[in-house]
Image (cartoon, rainbow, N blue to C red):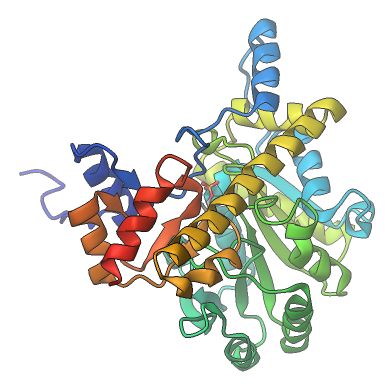
Length: 399
Ligand code: PLP
């Protein structure tokens, strides 16, 4: 008898399941709005020109493939710190930030969760309602109880800010609060700088531990603007906090798994002690990160010329998404559906469209347009070729 006979079938990821169904769909003109990927105007995942230049140089050099240090390539982690905290950050100057290269933003979240479980074994973790589904999964897997705080307000298609503040105010001191820095996934609704200031004040007052997830830096307003939350926490006098960031989207390097975990400690000494524990955790899970993606990001960020090119390409991606939001709203209005103007106010790749499960089912069955049951759509999967069809289909299913 097999030792695995007792293993039952585990439900798959609903989003990946949707993609499988999409791929198998023979209908021409099908569109997958269920993904979490930026596609360019021709419907492809772009290879950024800045990345390609580094890749070509690396291919010519054909370097040996030794192991990276446990916490990654120093050129990568140092450049990451400047991008996330700002080049002039007093925290960096004081040596209070310990950064490790991780296996994507997901790896940063999981390694960060393992660290927090050791530092704060009895804490709870609070995530937004709703949040990226994997947040709950990752923190549960690290042994945490996960609770929700109010976030999305379906009635206004915006943030339920009074509800959010009220819920944060009820959390026990030492609770970990997972916050989306920008481009909230799945809703697309973000806090204003003024609201962030209020959140920082509550977090400080309640002695909560902020864990900021920044997976879309540069996808809404720009590199520094999108890091407003990180910069405000850094300036707040709060002694310790955590940032997970990802380059999957901003460098279009999804499969290279490039992310980083930064821990802010009260002092340089504390940051060093925490980093020694982070390294022990990484060693016990995957030993050290992968070389290629890290070298690509470091190569771009450490060259003034390539960095400028990358920023230009990031701006192009961001502006294309904004154009698709504007186009969708405008075209829906010409179909008499003027209630979607909120889509233009949302940020990042996603929009909680307000479509319900039955409407999403009809989009798929009648129009070969795939979206998630919650109504989340990936605006970055729209382009000038599919926009008219998508809009006509949405207008048809809401009638
Ligand atoms: N955090 C959020 C909010 C995300 O949306 C994602 C990716 O979809 C991640 C983290 C993980 O990023 P990565 O693909 O780099 O693991």
